[in-house]
Amino acid sequence: MKRDLESVVSQACRKFDNDGVRIIDILREVQNRLGCINGETMELLAEKLSSSRIEIEGLVSFYSFFSEDPKGKVIIRLCDDIIDRFAGIDQVAKVFSEELGIGIGETSSDRSFSLEYTPCIGMSDQAPAALINGVVVTKLTPGSAGTIARSLKRNPDPSRLVKKKGDGNNAGRLINAMVKNNIRKKGEVLLSDRIPAGAGLESALKKTPDQVIREVIDSGLRGCGGAGFPTGRKWDLARRTTAARRFVICNADEGEPGTFKDRVLLTERADLIFEGMTIAAYAIKSKSGILYLRAEYEYLRPFLENVLKKRRKAGLLGKRILGKRGFDFDIRIQSGAGAYICGEESALISSCEGLRGEPKTRPPFPVEKGLLGHPTIVNNVETFCCAARIIDRGAQWFAAIGTDESNGTKLLSVSGDCKRPGLYEVPFGIKAAKLLDMAGAEDPAIVQIGGAGGEMIGRNSFDRKICFEDLSTGGSVMIFSSHRNVLKIVDYFLEFFIHESCGYCTPCSVGNVFLRERIQKIMDGYAEEADIDYLKDLSKTIMMTSRCGLGNTSPKPVLSSIDQFPVVYASLTRESKQGLQAGFDIQKALAESRRIAKRTSMIYDPVYGSENE
Image 1 (tube, rainbow, N blue to C red):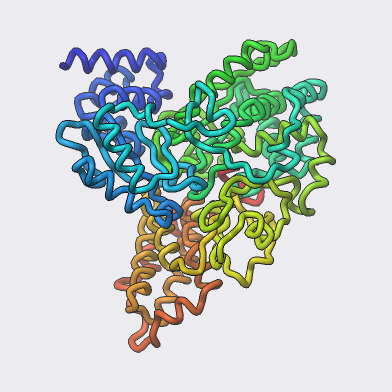
Image 2: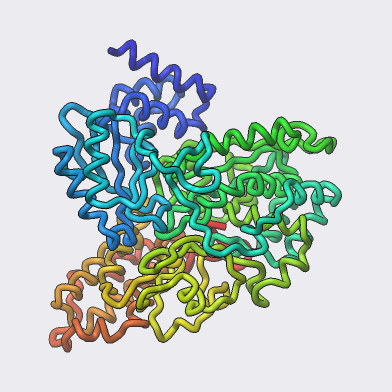
């Protein structure tokens, strides 16, 4: 048995050249083959990689797709985001539990099955959904859950569950998924049927790197992950560094609840993504690129690897790209292992370095000192696609679309209580009301724009515009009808942030727990007026003192719901008689965090910007 264990560990390490930087890939390989990474396995890995047991254990405990305890041969991960909850995932879970004889979070005694909940898997447009050993199962019902469970007991091969394939490349041999793209509205930038292959890269190589950067700057393209830092300026900062090596990283770790736009681009616009990365590499003189692919999208990896292979064969990657002397650049795919915080760019870089995905202290910023200490630009999937189109069509073409401060189009992932959930490419500046009408929203009363850390609006705000100067979003738009409970939605978002916090700083890891306790007190009808002031004060403290974007945005649903739905809060609170009943002084508890932080916020720097771009 020990000999078999040593063989698996040795093979996994050799597959990735015994490179400690690739330890996340190595751990994924070991987890998949052995079903767990126990203490003995950690010792062997530490020995092979010249690491330590405690470092390996730290990684295993941090990433949700790793486990020290044995998992079943078939792991059923049920999506537990707010959209899936309202779509009935609890009833689906009940059927799976009854059929398999195990509860949520348990593994069967014969290690055949594990059943667990997992956060958003990027399928909110076809909820309820699940991952079964990486195979995506959508539109679940209690009836289909029972059929699936019985089928797996007869034949534990999840690939056999794909009876009816999805559209586009989802139906191809390399993806072979039942996932649907659900493209509801095509725009002229990213979802157009007329996107010439390779035109952007060919145009870029006719320009100097400085001219390419100038074109992106003049277009007004801003990071499409939410923070909106000017893309061309980021590239220019990296270009101007005096470094021997520079890196280009594509952030394909869209873990924001309700977001799935990058899933569609990865499926249908993979060449455009890699083209945008290659243009960026030419602009900043980089030779190495990484596509960081979230664990939940691992089913797309064979397809993406094949696209890269074809591009190398066509001279679009590798040595002397398109015959350009001195232009050498290639891309590898780095799989994630289940950590929402890795959507933050410095945490993503940590993960690429084989570390826990914890945000780094800034400055220095990634453009100065990023991956392995070298200047690094991190942009998301949508941003790289836009950059490729801009170099093809020109800055003026792109800048003419949208608003004065928000140029171009925006991909919006729309889900929830609507007839037409899916992907919409619309010009920046579209009113929320128009989008709701396009999506066939059913009695919309609450709309969460920008994911869990976004802004919640009610009917009185549906005339507001989706753009950086008004309602900013990375792409998630979740619609809730009037029969939904506002506080239940807020409670879910806080639960999500508590689960996904890296635990590094007190304001985020502790403060969100206090927020949720107070929200639940209000839901239970025991709150006083002073509790509303408590929520506002604590929310602002968390946002001002947290180390990274997670804590800087996690209280926003609390604050925006209080602002938009004051009657709901007022109806559940009574007049204060004894003042604030906080339990202890939260300001005193967070004073040390403020001292350590020595700054007001890490979400946006006036010089550089922030994550998820």
